[in-house]
Amino acid sequence: MATVKELIRTEADGTLSFGDYSLSEKAKKEDFKHAGDIMKVKTYRDITRLEKNGLVLFESVPGTSVTGFCETAEGVAFKVEGPADAQITLGLSEDTEYNVSSAGKEIGTMKTNLGGKLAFSLELADAGEVEVKVEKA
Image 1 (tube, one colour):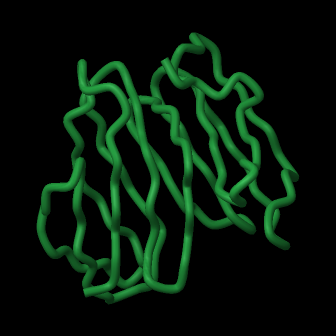
Image 2 (tube, rainbow, N blue to C red):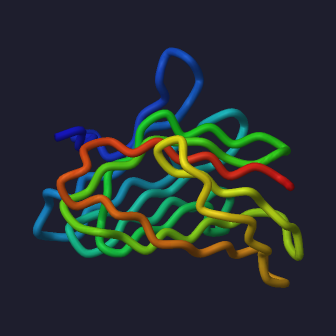
């Protein structure tokens, strides 16, 4: 189980790790500084949400734990773990196509809406950590 007990942390390689799906009560950490941005995380068994400068960057329902979260101009990459299948929503560039892959397999090309949201489902039950890559098409 890869829960992040401190709720959010910066790893030695500059990536973020956040979320603790084992919590039965909501927990949050605000004003976490990372790469010049202000991050906020809310997490527990029902939802994990990461905001960057007040905008949603990552959300999962139910809650998950995320490690190695790396955001670039081309997209995001991370590993995610959870006790059940999850709906993931990412805040990316608006009206843009992205190639999405999970565990090395293509999920497909998806387009963000005008708000920049991209949503997809992942099979996480009994899967351990699943690597996800979302890159501009």
